[in-house]
Structures are given as C-alpha cells and as structure tokens.
Amino acid sequence: MAKKKAEGYLSGREARRISKENRRITNEFEKQHKRKNVPESEYLTEMRDPNNTVEFDNLHTYFFTDAGTVKAVDGVSFEVPIGKTVGVVGESGCGKSVTSLSLMQLLQRPQGQVVEGSIRLNLGDKAYDVTKMPTEKMQHLRGNFMSMIFQEPMTSLNPVFRIGDQVDEVIALHHGEGKTKDQIKARTIELLEMVGIANSEGVYRMYPHELSGGMRQRVMIAMALACSPRLIIADEPTTALDVTIQAQVLDLLRNLKDKINSSIMFITHDLGVIAEMADYVVVMYAGRVVEKGTVEEIFHHPSHPYTIGLMASKPVVGKQVDKLYSIPGKVPNPINMPNYCYFKDRCEMCVAGCEGEYPHEVSLSPTHKVSCYRYYDNAEKGGER
Ligand SMILES: Nc1ncnc2c1ncn2[C@@H]1O[C@H](COP(=O)(O)OP(=O)(O)OP(=O)(O)O)[C@@H](O)[C@H]1O
Ligand SMILES: [Mg+2]
Image 1 (tube, rainbow, N blue to C red):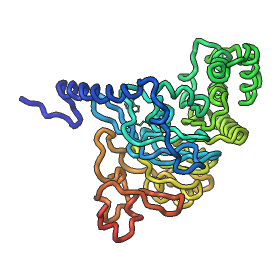
Image 2 (image 1 turned 90 degrees about the vertical axis):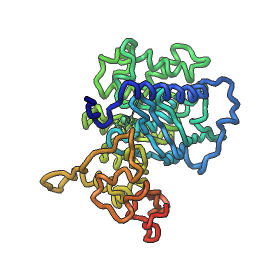
Image 3 (image 1 turned 45 degrees about the vertical axis):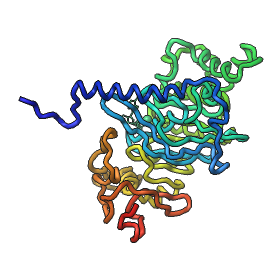
Image 4 (image 1 turned 60 degrees about the horizontal axis):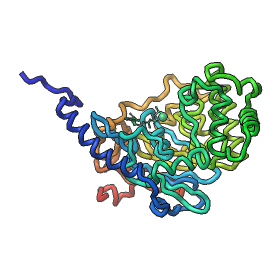
C-alpha cells in the first residue's frame, strides 16, 4: 500500500534528480568565479550615487541544496552612504548574513551563489560590481576596502595560534611590504590598545581560549580595522556579549568609525542597538527588504505591518504591559515562497489587493520606502501591478 507522503518529503529518486540538476547549475557559476586574467572592464561599473560606499541592487542569492533551492536573498536593494551607519534588522533566517556574505564573496560555495543583481562598490576613482568579479580579485578588496566582524568570535579566531600572530598575519598580508617583524608587532600592539585592551603585551602572547568573550570580540574588531577599511560589516558583533561589554564595544565601533570616516553595515535583531548606532535602517523579512528609511522614520513612523509588529514587540522602559506583543504565525518556507506578499499569512492589517502578487516599493518620503498594499493609492489597489 502506498504510504501517504508528508508535505516536503522527497523520494530518493527525486533528491538525486535535484542534486544532479544543482551540480549542473553551480558548475556554470563556479566556472565564472574561477576564471583567470579577467579584464577589469568586465566588472567595472558606475555608482548610481557617488555618495554611497555600497549599493545592493536587486540582489538574489540562492542556495542549491538537495532539498531544493533556498531563496535566502530574493531581490534586495539598499545602499550604504559614505560615513554613515546602516542597520539591517529582521528575524533569524531572513537573509541578513547571506546579504553581507554575498558582498564579501564569502558564501558557502558551490551551493551558495548570487544568481541575479549587482553589488556596486565605490573605490573612489572607480566602481566595481562584486557579483561579476572573479574570486582571485576579491582578496585585494577584503581587508583593505572592507572587512567583516563575524557573529561568533570563537569560530573566527584560530584556536592554535597566539593572538599576536593572528593579528600580525593580517597586517603582513595587506600592509606588510617593506615592514620588519618589529614594526608589524608595534602596529598590532597599537591596534589592541585602540580597541581598549589594557594588557596588550600580555594578550599578544595569549591563545584565544585564554581571553573572555568581550576581549575576543575586541581582537576581532582590531583585525577588522587593521587596514582602516572604508566599509565595516558588523554581523551581530555584540550578541555573544553581556550588556555592559556590549555598550563598550558599540562605543568603540562608533569612535573608530568617526576616526577613519568609514561606513558601517550593522546587522542585528536588537532594535535598541539599531536606535543607538544607525543613521538608516533596512528591515528585512524572508529574504526581501520590506521597509527602509532613516532611523527616525522607522522608529517614529514604522509603516510595514512587520515593522509595526517589531516595534510593538520590544520592551519600553517605563511602560507597563501585561505581555509583550508577539507577531503571530511563522516565516514561509524559503524553498517554497508564495507568489503573494510573504507577510500576508501573518498580517493583521490586510487590505483589498493583498492577495495580489508581491507588492512593489512605495515611497513615503525620499528616504522612506515600504513594500505594502496599504500604501498603494486607490487606482493601484485594483492590482494592475
Ligand atoms: N550554507 C547554507 N546552505 C543552505 N542554506 C543556507 C546556508 N546558509 C544560509 N542558508 C539559509 O539562508 C537563509 C538566510 O540565512 P541567514 O544566515 O542570512 O539568516 P540571518 O538573517 O543572518 O539570521 P540570524 O539572525 O539567525 O543570523 C536561511 O533560510 C538559511 O537557512
Ligand atoms: Mg546571521
């Protein structure tokens, strides 16, 4: 008797078919990445606005897994202006890390691939499109132009090397030419002091397990700042830290940013941190940007029902409530996204038109944009788009 198959169940045969198809697709992408001697003209591009450091434009990043294609990032567009901090918020799994890893070309390959869209980097005299750059060229940009502070410092530091050696290596790799060992060490000590490590000589000789979580995160920040990058990507840099250390690390990042006038892309699901750090906020939901604006616009006039829910679910000092609001339902399966608004099934503010296809972006101000049918004008609600 044939057993009724549970939803999402894949037969062995089906899984093999998917995996063969995946290999075919990813091999094509890998061939592009691995090309040598690619002329610069292939990835030269123009910034839409020269005041931006990075512009994400309709970015699609998929993972080709044996269970199906995970559309982790599915049409993300936003920019990071020079000298500003952009906060990226959204619940776990919405594609925040994948967006930043796409920018660094550090996706888990071959299954993770940028399949569409561009990421433009402003190098001052010219602009590059990261999605078209071969892997061998990325090394020059990572560290020098942009660097990343990862979610979990213990996994990013090598446990078998001393802290000093690890920071030295970063400096030697990017700015080591013509420098003696002592000069490199002096720079490492200077960096460790800059990030507020008092016992810098001692820490220089320690192994990662001998440091506290906060100190490890500071070392990570020191490494990220070693080459004064123009863009710092901080992926939940304070999640693993307690609140007082968190405040210190945030202060540190802010001061350093001002010192070297770089931009920060700050990823977190902590709205308090965003309010404190960011100039602009991008709200992501299920692989797409649902709302973006200045920090005042997002905090004082949240417009997308998801953002409104997020704001209502954060505790406010001095305001007494019986129970904090929680958004009902759950995020749709990223392998099988609906063809209507991804938030519709959880939304408590649906209007006429919501059953139509995914809503386009509506401008509420020159900086404030939201993808929601509630802000369509009446003619559009008929749903031609
Ligand atoms: N290597 C991978 N293979 C398959 N799917 C992946 C891989 N990495 C990420 N994903 C999927 O991509 C989606 C987005 O993941 P991402 O790590 O960007 O989430 P996030 O917003 O950073 O969440 P968090 O707040 O928990 O860090 C998730 O559905 C995740 O399962
Ligand atoms: Mg993440």
